[in-house]
Image 1 (cartoon, rainbow, N blue to C red):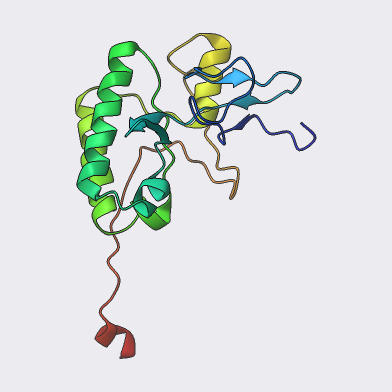
Image 2 (cartoon, one colour):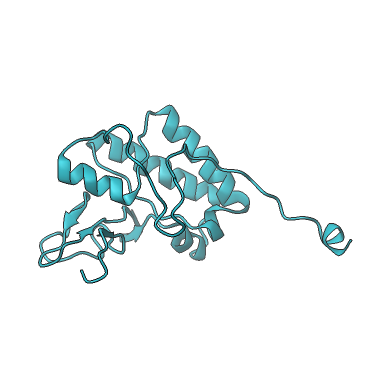
Length: 168
């Protein structure tokens, strides 16, 4: 509360939660605090709930194909239930190699199925206002660098140069 955060995405649906919010999928205000918990979506694998977090899955040896199938299955389930799907992505995993290809493929799939993309703050706003659409003209600003982030999602693949190119 002292640092003024709006939400905390360190919670995981059915895994890490506050008392009374074990099954919450939508953000909720943390009792006794001013901030909201934004639960990361989870999937059940071999009886264990695991967060939809690229690094977590990558470190457990999940192939990019398995990651894609998991994302698509969760999106389909979330859409059918009218629930949000919250995924945690890192540049170090989803920004490289086959996981980047998977992310691009998944975003195409999601867009073709009319998914709406929002950030954690937007999801909290939706919960607070009860509206599925955000007000027109809202400015999205990166809290790290302060730059306007209201443009569409754009993924650009930058291949690392060959060792021979670096030496020249």
